Image (cartoon, rainbow, N blue to C red; front, side, top):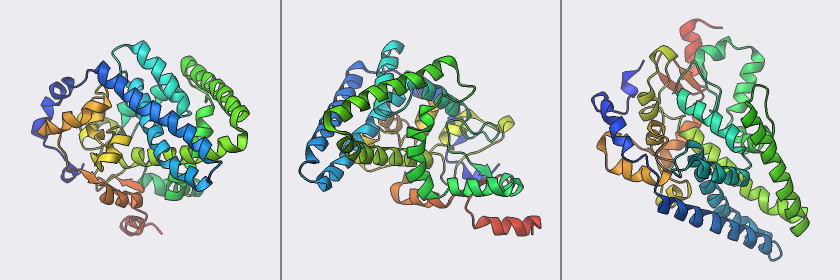
Length: 343
């Protein structure tokens, strides 16, 4: 374990529970206002994009960026509903979660289950693979067969990870209830698929399938690609935290294994404050709109920020080196071979 990678003061950690508990209560007025200032502009812009196709498709593509921003913001509402943090009523969370899930092509109950697993296992080397961006250790990579190494290299390629995989995940993977999926989670997949089929069918009947695709695809691709980038960079950065199950600590996984992604104000707004990811992992019951004040009012939660420019360096991080307790890139493999005497 590399203690040099710690971002936080261990003596402060015993107090984090009482600190975050003060913010873990939704405010109905603020929640409703966020629904209005997210979904209304999203649907208005969607309609304007449809009309703009008749004028200039370049205008349509330009409008795709703010529309995708509101789609991302609706995903944050969906995300909070999944945690039961957006409304006091679980039923209200579930209803809004299902609606915003359909907007984001994501089955609510299946995603809620997988994301809960992610929160319970983030940073645990022995419990990887559910709701996360899969990360191999250096040792695992060298012991893997050639086809698994190749697949991992392809998966970790930035073009694949941020341009191809998001579309595959949200268009294909989310449409299928895999073996072992619980009954309610599987039902949410099929009901979401049915709802999408009806909505897309009606849209194609109304505006034509060409216009629908010309509007939906750029919005979808921008939103999902940026969303996957945000999820990636909030756990794949330097320094971060990974441990084996016996030594894994929940608080350290949150404070040291989840980044504080300091974004410009406009991007912070569109991404629903998800950059305060270290606090979110400590307490997913805090509504997104309370994360900034929780951070600003409590010095013990103010970790070293990950800036937009510095976050780009995370693109070269590929594997976790257990010996040094840090993420490394492909260039490190040569050093590892020499140290281990591997041909």
